Image (cartoon, rainbow, N blue to C red; front, side):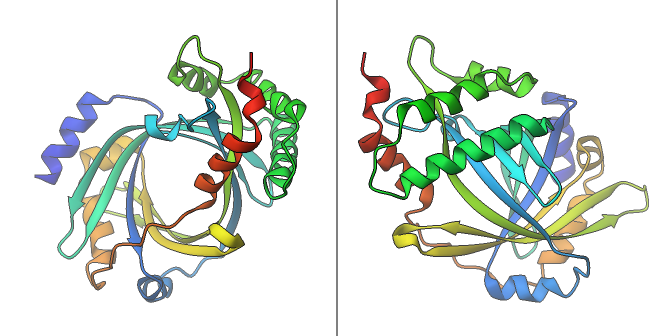
Length: 268
């Protein structure tokens, strides 16, 4: 069943830069249980997410598009990804999520640093009681529209025509990851990342989410479902996790703030 599914998806979605991803949300206790198998150094990252704002809503997430600045201790990467397919797969004791995404990156460090600085300045206003300066928002939006990489094409195609839209920083998070590589007899492999993600919620409090992710070359995962079995073996001994409560997170808080404190963007 799983093998047939991946063979079909491989034929339907022959994108050269598409990557499949397996994911399971974990509890803190499950995270601790798995952590002993991940001996490597913890990698840290700070992400700034960017959305398209039309005066009422953020538009990218609802179209399956994720746009962010991924900043680690060495460099910042501009990344745009679009969800191409999504399924839930049953391991013996767990339900894991399978996603296939088209991902485009830019390593333009000068532009990345400029966007990081401008986004940080906008967040300072979002965390204050002052209106956000229009010049600051327009400058941030203009920088993104000047990006010279294919990810911009994907972004602009997703936006409504003949409607004023601004690119704005929507929220942030901190990610901590430990990684290992699982190989099978055919020398294809799956990279496993055990991680926790820290995000801001209401009242300046923070919440931590835990996850296990698996990523491999598209052709390997789709032609060799045994790689999925390797992922399943890692999680089948875990107890069933309860569904996370819905929390009011930074992205929703900032959306409300943009609506009330930047209406001048849409005045004719």
